[in-house]
Length: 183
Image (cartoon, rainbow, N blue to C red; front, top):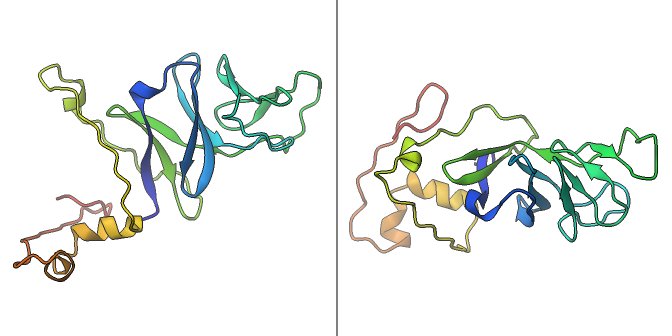
């Protein structure tokens, strides 16, 4: 359950040059859109003195500039410029997260063991189809562990006891060779 692509923002809410504070994966992160339009996600605290990059950080071209001493980080989290220094220390970096933009969402890859993405989220053609209406979005805060939400899909027996349904709903789950659900 903890491994996969997770929405960290809506595409429409992040225009080029925007910088947003994001709390995800029990981490403080900074989401920004470069001037060319690429979404980027980094750990939020500058490698220099720990300034929060979303609190006054600015997009300069393709990079994010720290609000405290002006260090510039690229989309991978590597410090590419220190305005008052010719040599950039090798450890001057923050964690950069794998990010894709699909279906009007900005998605970040999270893996419990830090492994790189093993699959890409599908592009749903309906999102670009003019015959389909724009999706309505809702955000809910549900006071359960995220694993409970996923297990809800493949544990129909609990509906009788937890949700007080009189009957167990019919259910069928199958898996493809790559272990993703095909239902």
